[in-house]
Image 1 (cartoon, rainbow, N blue to C red):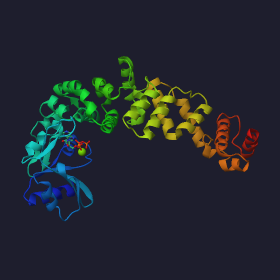
Image 2 (cartoon, rainbow, N blue to C red):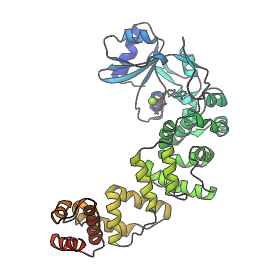
Image 3 (cartoon, rainbow, N blue to C red):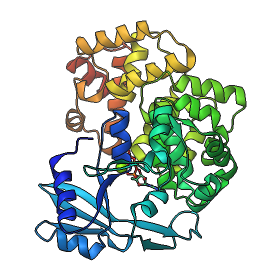
Image 4 (tube, rainbow, N blue to C red):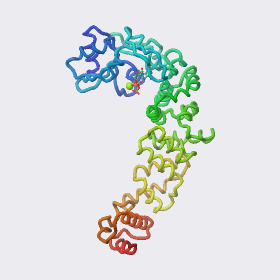
Amino acid sequence: MKLPDYVKKAIQILEQNGFDAYVVGGCVRNFLLGEPVSDYDITTSALPEQIKAAFSAYPVIETGISHGTVTVLIHNNPLEITTFREDQGYSDHRRPDSVNFSKSLEGDLKRRDFTVNSLAFNERSGIVDLFGGKSDLEKGLLRCVGDADERFNEDALRILRALRFASVYGFCIEEKTAASIIKSHPLLSYVSKERILSELKKLICGKNAEGVLLDFCKVICFILPQLKTNAADYKKAVSSLCRLQSDFSLRFAALFCFVGEPNAKEALKSLKCNKKTEIEVCLLLEFLNAPINTKADIKSLLSIFGKEQFSSLLALKRAVLNADTALAQAYAEEILQNNECYCLSQLAVSGADLLKLGFKGKEIGAVLKLLLDAVISEKLPNDFNTLIEHAKEQA
Ligand code: ATP
Ligand code: MG
């Protein structure tokens, strides 16, 4: 495994101070999978105070010092360094009651969630694989370290991490692990909505989302109780979802295509999703069945969606309704190329012009909208004098 220089440097500093140090978890997994590595985590026998002392020449941030984690900045690269840990007691099904520092790497690897995430590496020892993670990676199998029921009972977030890894990397979930996920899923009520949403986003956008959403529909419907649908519609929605690009709003809208916008909105609100995504999803569902037959139809949709999201709407129509969108696309290209007016900023008159005519406050917005609608539907040309005359008639 080839490590970046700043990571090598950190391991070297810890070793020179008499400690063991390894990169661990996701970075080793992704290296072996040939997937990009987003961040390197280091696990070490050094205690937090010893880590701080070893890196006294570098900026150190005490991120999670009570859990043994210190962030060190090496040549401007942040690196999380964590003391070997064994977690104890998980009475809230989410976080350990206490963290015990461990003398051995083995103790630390044992607390990790899945065998493929329990691999460690340094240049002295090569890959350290105590739980068969390498062979599981080769087989594409996701398996808990130790007893699956116990591991999900300790921390229910692992249930969604499992589904997320299976979706993103295309792993098959090993039989006992899968059975335990189905059995343990009600424990997800102990997991915060924010964490559920963050895992769900990655899960829905993964390359194997279809398999995971179908095999674990019970879990999905538990975290999305608003997805009230029958098995046949659920299956259809999932298969449309998988024909779409990996975009959360778009795929989420496809998943809710049979249950409608109010349910999708409620689901996103209850998972504390950001407003922008909520609006994107709701618009997509609200206009899923909007006509796209005339140029006026397309201009009106462009004015609501903007260029990018309009493409998403067409993609959703193709995936869910099997709609033929060729003509709509051709119209949109023509409108954009000829700079034909479909939004207020392109309209030949502005709010300031209406102000000069004596319109006030809310009237201005209403008249502008009326003029835009008339231009979009080709009842009026986008011409200053014509629009001003028409505006005067509204006074
Ligand atoms: P990615 O960063 O790509 O999401 P990752 O595997 O690196 O994947 P992190 O959340 O960064 O995931 O966690 C780093 C490592 O810490 C994991 O590989 C795993 O070994 C361990 N880990 C993380 N969360 C848990 C958990 N809830 N239970 C047990 N071990 C965990
Ligand atoms: Mg990581």
